[in-house]
Image (cartoon, rainbow, N blue to C red; front, side, top):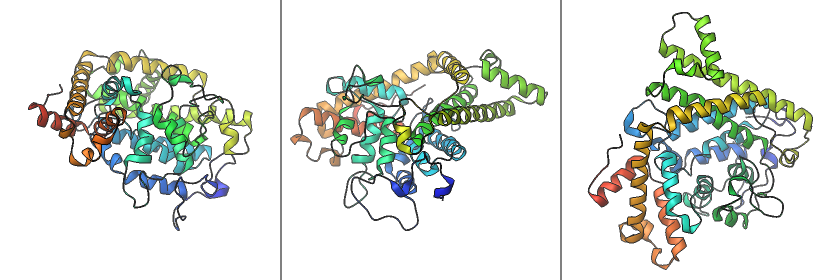
Length: 400
């Protein structure tokens, strides 16, 4: 366990947490943030990540990333960053572990489909859904719904990409046009998460860790799937430089080991850059508390300008050569169709929902009914969604 002396002044301190919505006695053996990690790991929604798509659906191969393996890789990077920056490692890990809990089946295709289905009812947002999972949908404890996580974990889950509003409450960034999701606003009436400020440094490094993990590991999965070749990656500045260095250091190295070394080196270089750039920003800010980080007016964690350019080039390559290629798009289009059909069926025939999801359904207004259906679908794994499609429509699409 980290000690107070091993944490920087600007780190979040579990001994001075702003607490939980429902007060609980402190654990005898774990810090407040370690307890959050453990609650997330034991959550049903966390286990379901095992069978949720990252990029490739489950039946395309055993070695591709799933939401769960991606989440574990993000947690590893987040802890590494937190350790070197003297932040609270448990809080950084908790945020990494929880960041994808709101994703529906079939990755971003499933999210887009649900967002279309809920267009007249506020849409669907996986960050808001993650908050909904940990504050409402998980039902494991006798005295409250949700996991009753600390304020710091909840604010980091909601604000890891920056403030959601300005001081007056006007939406910012991705929510400027659509507005902040009702799930987040409703929870804020119970426990103010200060949507107008940045999150603590631990949440910020967890967000960067997500970027690092999916860049490096999507390269690995894309190569494994044959969507592109190592030679094509040499046109991308940072991977190209690393591939050249590997060829010099290990002449004749086989492709499998070359890819492994490429992924390892990329992660190391990206981590080193974030540590250097974040340290530079912190030195300029000279924060004396976690609140100084929240009120800084800009993010303290991130890539240098040079590395941000390299990161953008990797993302552009993956967008063109992986996420948008016909083979992947065809599968995702089929998957989105599954989600839309399930939603339409449950809305037309709520009796097709499992018994526990029908309880009290008729007494809900239309918006609440639609949200409950979305909650049910969002919690599905890929294979459960396909099984439900088979049960309701007598056909199970082959997503290939």
